[in-house]
Image (cartoon, rainbow, N blue to C red; front, top):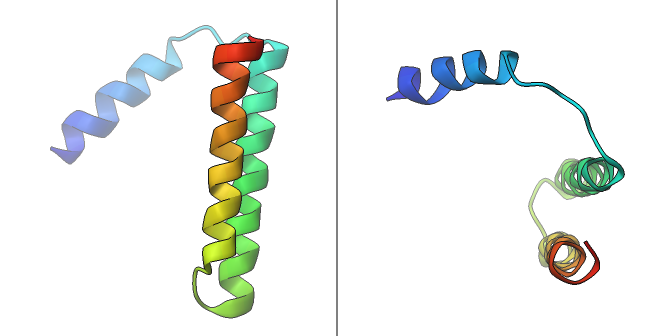
Length: 71
């Protein structure tokens, strides 16, 4: 199962044309920002606090609004 979910995907991604628009860069930056918030929060407190999860929900809400309303 691991082979089927990693190797063919890696081959497919290597032959994909990568041209990002501004929308994809916004998605990328917001994903990295949320990941950093979670990483810093876990490193500081040695646990995953509810505030960090709520921040993740806010980023997810931003994404949904941007995809369906702003485009």
